[in-house]
Each structure stands twice: as C-alpha cells, then as structure tokens.
Length: 260
Length: 308
Image 1 (tube, rainbow over the protein chains, first blue to last red):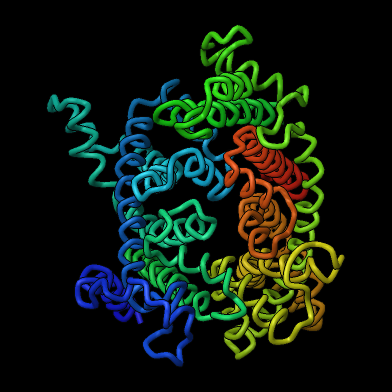
Image 2 (cartoon, rainbow over the protein chains, first blue to last red):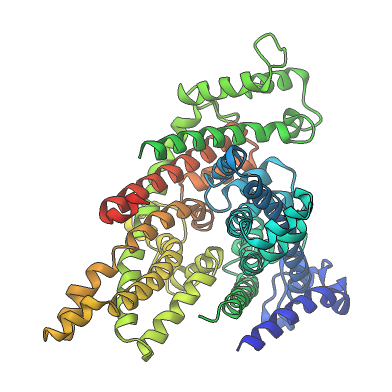
C-alpha cells in the first residue's frame, strides 16, 4: 500500500513533467466542430471551443503541481528561516515575530490568498505570491517549536563552545536536525496547495484565463454543467486523487518516522 | 481571558493593517489598476479621494493617515462602495444573514451526521459499518467543495430535479444542497474525531469499572463513555465553523447563494475595492471572535484547559 502510494505520486509527477511533451499542444487549439462534445466523441471529451480535455488535464497537471511544489519550497524556506531565527534569538524578538504570525492567522483558509490574488493582476507568479503569503506560517510554527526543543541540547552547546558563529550554529547544527517533521508537514502542505490553487482558479482568481489548470477547467465546467458534465467530473477526480495521494504520502512519512 | 481579549484586539488591528496596506503594495498606482490607463484626470482624482489616497485638496497623504481615515470610515459606516455608492457595511449587513443561515445549516447537518457516524463506527469497530463510515469520511475530507457542489447539482437538481438549481428564493429547499456541500467536510472531520475520542475513552479505567459492576454494555457505552467522549468534539465545531467562512465563498459561488462570499466575488470582479476590503475584514472579524468564543466555551466545559 505504502509503496503503491509512493509509486503513484512518482507517476503523477512524471506525467506532469513529460506528459505535455508527449501529447503535444495540438489538443489545446480551437476546433469548433468538437465544441463541448462529451466522452462519446472520443478521448476524454472536449471543452469550450473544442479543446481536448485529456490534453488540458495533462497540461493542467503540470501547472497545478508546479505551483503547489514551488509554493511549498518557498514556504518551507521562509518558514524555516523565520521560525528558527525567532526561536533561536528568543525573548521579546521571538514574542514580536510570533504576534505577527498570529495576525496572519486571523484570515481563515484561503481568504488572505484570495484577497492578495484579487489585488494583484492574475498570473502564475502573482498566484504563487498569494499562496505563499500564508503558506509559510505553518512551517514557521513547527520550525520554532522544534528549534526550542533542540537548542538546549549538548551538541549545540558544544558548537557554541567551539566558537561557531550564531548563524553557523543555527543553520549548520540545529536546522538539519529539525527537518524531519517539516517533511511530513510539507507533503500535507502540497495537497493543501493543490486544493488552494484549484479553489482560486475555480473562483477566477488563479491562473490567467486560457491557462490549462484543473481548477480553471472546473470553473468552465460549472457554466456548462447541463451540457458537458465531464468538464466538472474529470478535473474534480484529478484534484481529489492527487490530494488523496499526497495526504497518504504524508501519513506514510509520519508513520515511518514514528512507528507508534 | 483578558490576555486573550488583548490578543484579539492586536490581531484585528494587524488584520486591518494588512487589508489597507495591501492596496499600497500593488505595483504602480491602485487608481490606474482599477480604472485602467484611459481614465480621465477627474475620475482618477475622485477615486483617489474615495480610497483615501489623497486629502480633499488633492495632496497625497501618508499611510498612517490613510489607515486612520479608513478605520474611521469603516466605524462610522462612511465607507462607500465604489460602484453603487451605498455604504459598504450596510450592504454587508444585508447579505450577512444568508451566509449565517448557510453556516448554521451546515453546522447543524454536520453535528447531526458526524458524531452519530463516529459513535457507530467506534461501536462496531473493524466491522463493515466501521469501514464504510471511515470510507465516507475519507471522501468527505478529500473531495473539494467545488467538486461536491456541482456533483450534487447534477444529481439532485438535474437528473432528479428535487432541489432548485441556484439562488435562495425557495426557502428551506434551496439551502439543503449548499449546506450539504459546505458541511460534508466538517461532518467527516467530526466523525473521525468522535471515533478516535470514543475509542480512547473506551480503554479508560472507569469503563472497566463500570463493566465489572455488571452494567450492560449499552449503558456502559451510551451513558459512561459517550458523555466523556463527546466533550472534545465541541472544540472542533468552533474551529470548523471559522474555516467554514472561507469555504462559504466557494459554495456560494456554485449555488449563487446571495451571502457575503458571493458579494466578495462580485466586488472583486467589479474592482470595487472598498467593498472587497469590507467583506474581508468582516470575515476575519467573525473568524477571530468565533475562535475566542470557542476557547472560552471549552474552558467552561473542561476546567483543565483554563490552567494551561
């Protein structure tokens, strides 16, 4: 089961990487003869103005996973730096930084990302900024609590006694020791970001119009729910399956780290 | 409680700061962003005044004064929609009952279904009923709202036309599908939480004591175990109710439910920034207050929480 999940995640990533290259961009072109034709017209059916749904889904996988993975990496880096520096310095500095984090927690779910995406112009870069603006907070909290636990240990004292600079102590000695729980959180974070990206694209605040993404296909599908329900069902399944896969991956990583 | 309240005030202050400051972060001038390049000088000046970027003489004002005038206009209900000229807070107040009704119906649905299924699953642990409910919970957690909603519409408004497709004009019938889409995720979380909580309680010493007294399994389960197992479920309600406010934006769009979520999306489309800011602030306000109340209620129920 666990191996299967890892293989499926790998397959998803490979599909996103090489799939568009294999299938080619022809399916994204306008072909009014196939406008909104269902599965009976072949492949996985056709969308608005006759683009091929299969091609759209494969290109969409690349966009959705690219955004989710990029945001996770950026959020991890910001979160680790913020949380660990806050915990290592401690005192009033730490308290102030954490109160700033509290402010970001005042916006439920994707609300802040939604607001930022609305203020900025639509685009993949701005979407990444919007999603990262809240995405790093969770990592910062975990990194902080981990550093608080680790920084009193003997090997840290030893490094300080040997005259290592605070920067070196923190990023060479402490941070490598706190990464474990963050990997687990990151794999849950990826599935949350796939959902968030799809939500924003569904609300029309994600990728620019015409960019293939699972969420943007769903948005289109809702408008044609009566005539072309496959435009909702297929991307919905893609999103649900990949969210599930990355959640399973997170469960597996968590169990592998802590057999209890 | 006092420190909690102080924290809430600080958090709300910070939230307003973010909501106003974000407009300044737009590359270029927010006025150009809203009006486009071709707007007349007069329209620009008027919008700049509207947004509080310049004072009445047309001189640019600093961020602190911008912030101050924004807050005072929010509080005195002077903040006007850029499109309709109506006061933002009045418009929000008119739409808020719809979102409140939706959230209430979703919580009601989740509260009826979640703990019930959780109790059943724990009672029949590792039997088919347990597996079935856990599978449903997994679906409820992993299926996005913007997927469940259209599926429900397809099934119950198109193939079997039982419920209306959109809007809120059919009273109770029109709220059922939106509430179901919004509440399903919460019901799933509640179910998992209840199941884990009941299983934990069932291995406690006082359950063994109750059994050794010769009480029937039914009394042990429903009288001794459940009462203790259901307490932590209260916290989950509060937390989920808050996150529901964000989910409501999606569900309201799918079902054209005329709450503040739909208002937010409409205003974003029309680039009606004062309205967008107002709705975001109102949602953040309710979220923070609900979380505070949850903490308080939980402290009442379980005195151990107050100590820590």
